[in-house]
Image 1 (cartoon, rainbow, N blue to C red):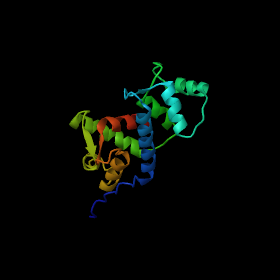
Image 2: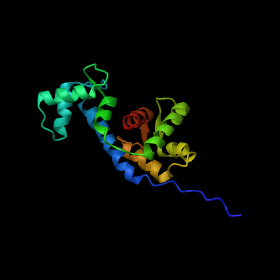
Image 3: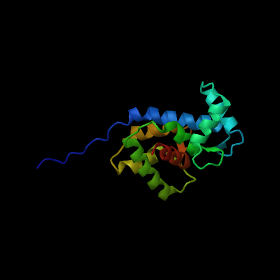
Image 4: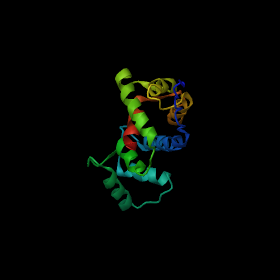
Length: 163
């Protein structure tokens, strides 16, 4: 009888570029959230778009705000901003894996914790979804402060925006 074949997890490297882009959007949002309340105004949105190289009129910024402001409070949350800017992105399997990991990590850790590559691997390993190298790379591309970890809250926000 032949030994059972264990499939190797597919490399997630192509998807890491998209995650890095999403992380850069989060950093831009935080930089323009002048009062750090997690919300941006039309003026702050105009500043973001200008920093990204778009020369938009006030009307265009207001139109963009209306399209992105799904809860109609006149402000953009980080979630709304990410959703507005990631609608066309496709991460396929990676989003499903990260969604399952976020659920499992949330149950284990609570929302105020940070996630390392090793912790992500421990969760995804049981699902057969990613190598240790991929998990370390996922955390590295989302790690804005270089401490080797990402907050579970930020990871949840990214996954929600990509669904």
